[in-house]
Length: 167
Picture 1: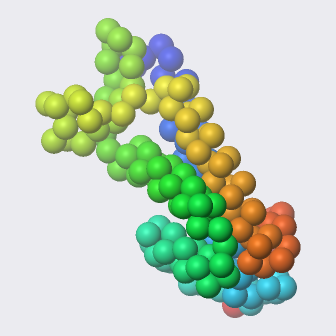
Picture 2 (picture 1 turned 90 degrees about the vertical axis):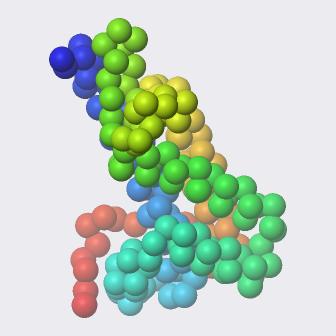
Picture 3 (picture 1 turned 30 degrees about the vertical axis):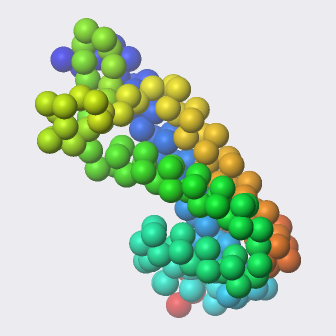
């Protein structure tokens, strides 16, 4: 049975995924800019060819290594990484676990098939979760922008998604 508010629940998934991907884009841009500032087509090429193929853990470790090398405040780095990791955990659950709708409670949850019989590990998908992810993303992006300013010497540039891909 399709829930009456299915579109609302579906929108939660989309909003969370979009915020997480946007945060990840800023992290990728910081890493690329660190190695190829000022921005050139080589930087965009590097970002698309190398950085986007790195797994999430490697990107975070690269951020930490850049920050250590540039002597960025360890507390700032710790806070940024914590927010990035927490957002990724939620994003991964939404992207990879099964969604289950309960018509009695009108709740949408994600959980692994194994956890279906053990509901303590299910994740409720609702406006509260969206707001939590939004705050963590904002904190992470704000920190990424601060780090960008410190290690590149420039504020995070606005990048058009329509930039030409030059090989």
